[in-house]
Amino acid sequence: MATLFEIPIMTCKDAATWETWVSQNYTDQKGVWLKVAKKNSGFESVSVLEALDVCLCYGWIDGQRRAYDSEYYLQKYTPRRKKSLWSQVNIGKIKRLTDAGRMKKPGIAAVEEAKADGRWAMAYASQREATEPEDLLLALEASTKANDFYATLTRAEKYSVLWKLMTAKTPQTRATQLQKMIEWLEREQVIQ
Image (cartoon, rainbow, N blue to C red; front, side, top):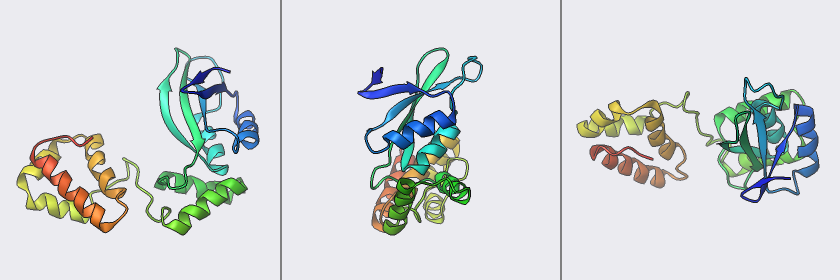
């Protein structure tokens, strides 16, 4: 089997084949690059949405996406790390999968761990759904220069600011991040 960064590359023609592989390998593998057929390639494969549903059921998560060739791209899937962040999008998927009776013991365990340690409640919003929190709005209001530059940023660049605030683990860390964001914006620096 081919590999990329010592992680195997594989193809699955459908969701059932993918689920069979994940159910047999979720404890033994550190991850896999799944070849996903491009829309007009003429090839069949499991879709990224189908693949993610299966992964969530077994306590795995999606990661990087990379170009592969003219017919396929690669999507990385790995076991969820103990302290990895949860997105509100994936929490919604978990609810749907739970309601459909699809969740498996390892996926349920990952959810219970996240609920127990607070990561579930701190799930971050997607770029589409994220809005400026009150503390950021107040800080921007207090700094005309930062506010003016923030207004010129693209949606993705603004999300970089929001991401730093949404993923801060403590109020003190969040306050520190907010101060840094305002300083960067005052210097007209795009946050990466």
